[in-house]
Image (cartoon, rainbow, N blue to C red; front, side, top):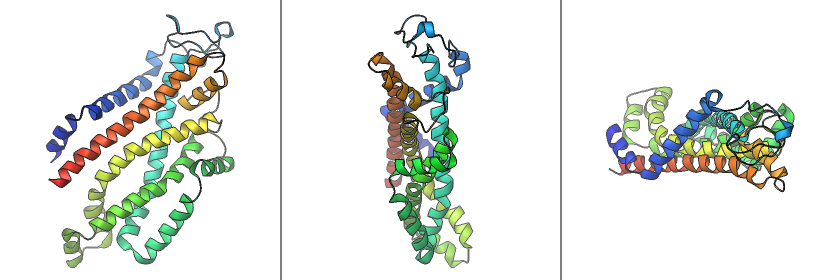
Length: 277
């Protein structure tokens, strides 16, 4: 099954290209201290808002900082932020989703009532409210984002669990007296993982966009550190003086999110074909 999945996945050129692009982004960001030609925090006011050139490949910002170096280091922060938010959503959403889907009745009613109440708030407004209590910063911002998107993970796990618990092998496990925790974690959770993996790749792209939005309005990464969102916000405020500055962080966010979505679509299609067979 594993090899059939890999064969089907490698036939999808867009998904493979997206995976290669994501790996390239990850490697370049991890190796930013070796690749970046300048210190991303080093200021040179005499070189303010320079256009792209041989010495500064993507130009400089208002404070004379090298945009290419800040883009590499900002990518590390943005990817880490998306990872923290996605991991938080999975930690919060998976276990309650399994419990609600398998146990049903009052447990399901209570969990879904809390979930519906949380989802009734606009995501960005709720994130701003959480950050106003916990304080600004990328970690607090991403924890807030993780809490906000956790209900979507919970709903996915719940619906999948409700379908799987009616399967014959689960009924057989119950008939021989297998305990509920064993059924959930040995028989149900492994079958929940495939759609959850697909959703996780899409969720990472969504959390990256939310991080960019929060950083854009000053609730994410604190200066002088950079993320793609803060770079986008700084470039937007200087768009009349250096209109090209907004292109680089904007393109980085757009292409990375697009690659995550294409990668997730590729996994979904490969898993779907395996399930239909």
